[in-house]
Image (tube, rainbow, N blue to C red; front, side):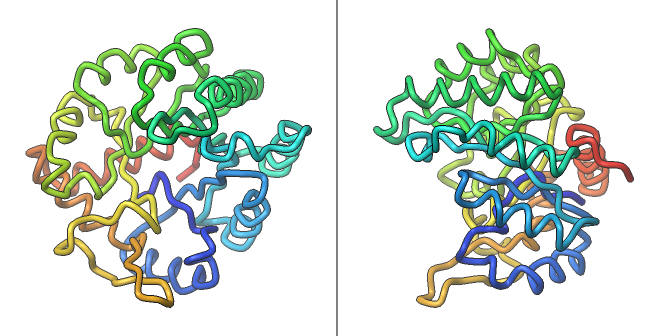
Length: 265
């Protein structure tokens, strides 16, 4: 199985990367995409990709939360990381109206620059969107990435699925949406074609329900974190919700991830 989105470079878990990756392998996970969020953490993503070249596939992007922190030459810095890792993808980037700042116009400017870079280099893009579906559609309709994009932890509606599919969307399911209060999101995933579905943990965030936590993980002060090795339990629970065989779901989502991220195997 394949974790299509997580943040192993997060300072809360990065010092434990060796043991976390070992636990992921033991759980049957064969690879993952580690997503950068800013110029500050791109070097850590690169270091992890260099340390685990057969397992970690890097993505470098400027998250909308960090759009105002960018340097004057951030696009050149981003390009340099993509030059070093030609098989990398762009992400995590996008738009977010859950936060008040940076302003949505600045977020769109930064997002559009990354979509343009993805078009120039023909790279897949991982997209973050929260409460900003209108601005997202505006950006994607004018600048659709030629090889498609992944909406990670997709929390939209069936109608949004239908709108986004023709633009090249893939949809990644996070175990957080198995929380009872998030059950409505499962209706959207019923509308996702099987060849556009991926799964993720978004570790160390987006905790699944307690019964699906196979390996506890926490910070030094006891804050609960999401371990990437929870992915098999998340996949099995999603299969139950979708009325499909777990083994078939794992085969399909792994094949979808490898095709989208251009990973041999």
